[in-house]
Length: 204
Image 1: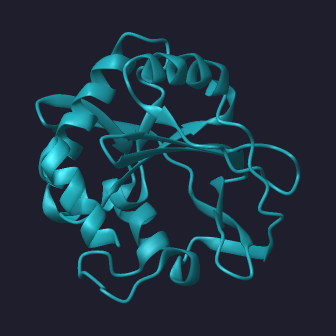
Image 2: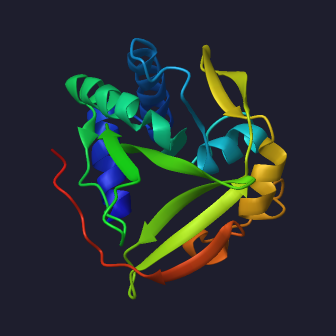
C-alpha cells in the first residue's frame, strides 16, 4: 500500500525528495514571518540526516522539530499560519496527563512534527507515543543544550549545539546507519514507558 500511495504522490506532486525540500523551504519561510522564528530546532531524524548525510535521510517522510514549553503560544499562532499556507494539521495526540505535547502537519504527503520540550534538571524532556498494541507513552530525555545555526536548502536553521551528545543519547552510534533501529523500541533517550490511552484531539 505504501508503494502504491507513493506512486500516486509522485504523479501528483513529484518525487519525495522534491516534495520534502519544497515543504521544508516553505515551512521555514512561513515561520520566518512569525514570532516562532528562532524558537524551534531540528531534532531526531532530521537532525540525524543533516549530521550524518548533510540533509534529510533519503527515504524519511517525517521532518522533526522541537521547541520549549514556554514558547507554546508562539507555536500555536505559527501553526495557524502554516495551515493557511496549505499544511494540514493532524489530530494531536493527548498525553495520559491530558496535555498535548506533539503536533503534526502534512504537506504534499510529507509530515512535519513539532515536539514540545520541558527542562528537567540538566536535561530536556519530551513525550512520544506509538499506537502499536499495546499503545505506549514514552518519556525521553537528552542533555540540555543551546542552539547553533546551520544552512540547509539556502536557509538558516537551528540545531542543538551539543548535537553529537543528543544523537548519541537517542541512537547510540549514530554515524553508522542501523536498518534495524526502531525508535519506540530502541531509543536510548527513553527513561520510562507505560500504557497510553491512545486519545487524540480534534485537529481544529
